[in-house]
Image (tube, rainbow, N blue to C red):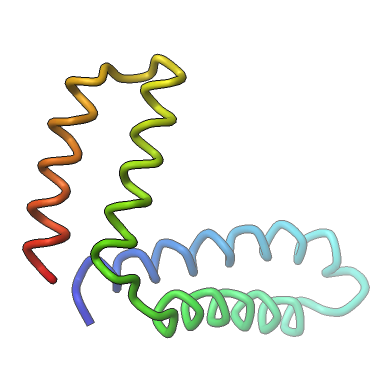
Length: 99
């Protein structure tokens, strides 16, 4: 598995575990700490598995998503048209170069 995917899975799992931990603290008095910790770990594992096992999008589909996101950013005046074009070209080299 590529390093970026591992880092994303780890970060996602940690975020879910943190959210589950907050709920766990609220429920600890009722269920018990071990059961709540196990539930948090299971939730984190489910998120990690969904990320790893999800199908990889085709390069053209990914580029279409990039284009639509950049068009939205331009419409909201978050970036200029020139910046969007340069960024799209940069990403196209990376995404389509890997395809």
